[in-house]
Length: 123
Image (cartoon, rainbow, N blue to C red; front, side, top):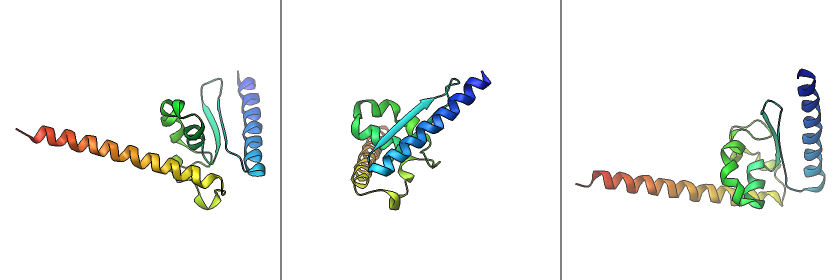
């Protein structure tokens, strides 16, 4: 099992490195998610896994969002912690759109909470 896990890690690192080279070399959006034999996730995304999935596969974004938001490829805590200066011309609008969706979702949640709070306070 240890040898299998080591081979998997090596190949995953190669795959993630290739994805990184592809995204930088051709300014394309890339998302790669792998799971080790012990179900440990590894991922790389350009600009982030979450933004790529949200943009190109919005139906599955909702179910994967908690997983993708845990850590980005650069070890940040949230997908929105991307180094904006490092984003390319094609990536920045995708990131902006993802932030707009996040803002809308947060506002909707706040409105729901506020409405619920008002209902509880009425006699």
